[in-house]
Image 1 (cartoon, rainbow, N blue to C red):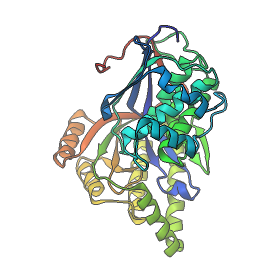
Image 2: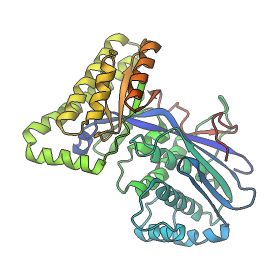
Image 3: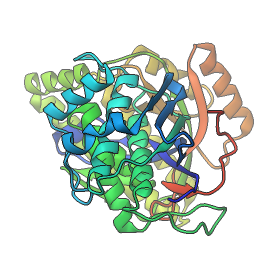
Image 4: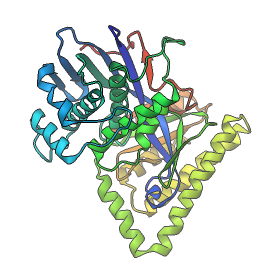
Length: 397
């Protein structure tokens, strides 16, 4: 990295179709979101190690000598990532002064940094003096992959800082990507960070953060779809908190009580995901775009009702769907449900007047709402990206 300043970004994600059904071996489609987390890394002028996370009010600085224990506490092979042991996590908690059982975003973000910093540095036996600043357009705890985007940015930055991966010379708009082997290593380390934060994640969120585009997840296997269009959506946060664990347990309870009723619903959700994949490929090819957008809208409407049947709907999401339907738009929940976020499909020719009216109506109910894009070309996307100039929306550190 030498004396360079690098800015790295990774996108959030939404689930297009397959929520909850994926737990039962069905197909899910996860899509990158054009809301991102950004990380700036540069040599630290006072030779310390600094971590600044303004979104969650975390500003920390350590002397390298205080972090030397990481090299012995975390003996890792940088090319073969592994998860933190319970003993290592406990040692990091004690060092950072984080009480056991504390799972707020600030505490987990610090633990994740300390583990990745120590593990990635342990092979070289050197702790780089760096200043890291992270800021994000993604709300935390909304099911949009904010923690995975953070882990992807951290992994890419730290691997670059110790020379394990290169930072290629920028080619287009001063941005570029790493090669496939390097992206795979970034993804593997980001997954270890996600494990520390979530315990047993699927790996979908960090894969979307690493490669972008649309990913197909089925029975533990993740495939990047090559022929996908960029879709316009409204993304709405109802700001209703929910427990993913409780919602997943509720679906399981229904499945146990009424398998002959719930299983066909999950099979239908699986078919919706597969049909959506086919339709996205057709749109990307430019075939009968209006006809295929109509199919996407129908799939959203059908899946919306399926998700209510399995018990993961919520009155706040029903209201979202009703408000947007009044403007001829089609919406469904994305993620765990029970509140949280929903997405609304916008056709290429949806008028700005309709979009703005919908956003105003949703905001009148106290929801947060963004117009953004999802999908696009996966392997040719600029995420993660390595920049040698500052992003225009960089906050002051």
